[in-house]
Amino acid sequence: MSEQVSQRQFSVFLAPFYAFFARAFYRDVGIHWRGMAYAYLLLLLAVSWIPLSVDVYVQWSGFLADDAPAIIRQIPSITIENGRLYADVDQPYFIRTTDPDEVFAIIDTTGQIDSLDEGTARLLLTDSQIIIKKTDTETRVYDLSGVQEFYLDGSKAQRWLHLAGTGALIVLYPVVVAGSYGYRLVQVLFYSGMGLLLARALGCSLKYAGIVRVALVAITPAVVLKTVVEISGLSFPFAWVLYFAVAMGYLAFGLHANRDEKEAAAAE
Image (cartoon, rainbow, N blue to C red; front, side):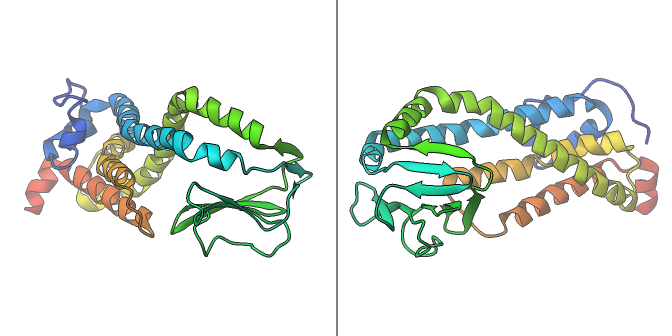
C-alpha cells in the first residue's frame, strides 16, 4: 500500500472520538494526515491538561484559604548549606493542619524519623533529603546534596504561596503541556519502533512515517484514560502497565486497519 497524498477524510477535532473504534479513521491517519498528526497530539494534550489544571487550581485555592495560614504560622527558620538542612527548632518537629490530630509535615535532622510510612504527614525534611508522599502508593525522595544555599521561613513561604495563588499555575500550564508533549513524542517514537515489528506481522505496508502517525493517534485512549483516572482521584500500582497495554492494543488496531488490501484479501 503506497502512502498516497490526498485530502484528509476525518476532522482533527473529532479524532479523540474516532480513535476509540474507527478503522477507517486510522487508515486515513496512516495515509493522509502527515504533519497534522503531530498537531493533533499537541491539541489533545492541551485539552487533557485543562481539567487537571482546573482541579489543581480549585484544590490550591481551597488550601490557601483554609489550611495555609495555620501551617505558615508553624514554619520555623530553615537553612540549607552545602547539602545539609538545619532548622532552628526542637526536633522532631511536627507541623499540623487545622486539625490538631493531622500532621502535614515533619522536620527531623536527628535521624529519629526517616520515612513517611506511618502517620498522616505528606512531607518530611531530614538533614539531607526532602521526602514527599504524593499518594499512599507513591513517594518521591529529593536529595539535597546539590543545594549550596537556601533559606525559608514563614514570611518567605507566605510570599511564595501568594505568588502561586495569583498566577503561577496559569504560567506553568504551557510549560506542563510542552513537557508532556516532549515526553509523548519520545514515547511515540519508542512505540513506532515496536510498530515496525507489528506492521510486518499484521501485513501492514505503511512506511515508518505512517506508523509514527498511527502511533501519535493510537495513544489517545491511554491519554484519555489517564486523565479520567487522575481527575477522579483514583490510584493503583503499576498503572503505567495498563496505559502501555491500551496504547499498544490501539497501535495494533490502527496498523491492522492499514493492511495492504491484496494481502488482507489473500489472508481471508
